[in-house]
Length: 170
Ligand code: NAD
Image 1 (tube, rainbow, N blue to C red):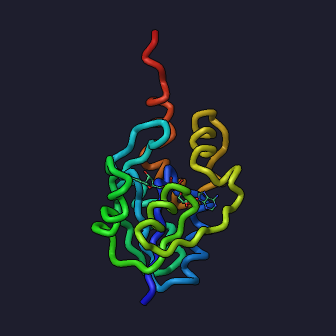
Image 2 (cartoon, rainbow, N blue to C red; image 1 turned 135 degrees about the vertical axis):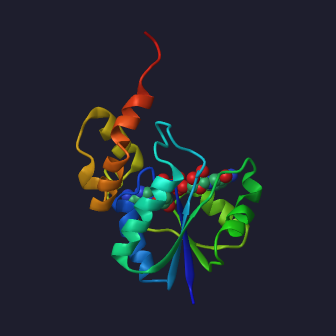
Image 3 (cartoon, rainbow, N blue to C red; image 1 turned 90 degrees about the vertical axis):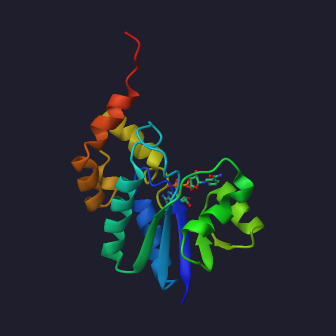
């Protein structure tokens, strides 16, 4: 039994994440997805709640068809203790997949095997670019799986982002 962990904020889950998960699904028996910064929502950089992101990731993984666990993980103040915190929340895993330099450093210092995943169309498949498009009124729907479009529409996610981006200056 080989279990792999992937960590991300998934603000929102997009087709780059989806490509990575499809690739990981060929290498492990079960996938653990850690929803990072789980305490954050209703911010321009982090508009969606942990629960909404759980829905996005779960719906995408149903399509891939691999056994998986989606675990919200709140941030903690001490980076040096973060891997122990992640391990305390997630089922045991043998390997972690990430490209985030801080996450790689912390996992490797804690003795966890890390594999980098290739980046797919990073200019477009990027949470930053998708949120920018939502705010600008540009098309973003083709950068995320269809199920994720439905989830964002159901919670009125674009309106939320536009509302929180407003200035309180009259
Ligand atoms: P993210 O959603 O930006 O990315 C998740 C993963 O997907 C990354 O490995 C990224 O490289 C990959 N990815 C993104 N776009 C891709 C594309 N187009 N093609 C292929 N792969 C792509 O999330 P993140 O910022 O890496 O998440 C790390 C989480 O860990 C954050 O929530 C952070 O707060 C948390 N963290 C917390 C602590 C702490 O609490 N002390 C410490 C370290 C990290």
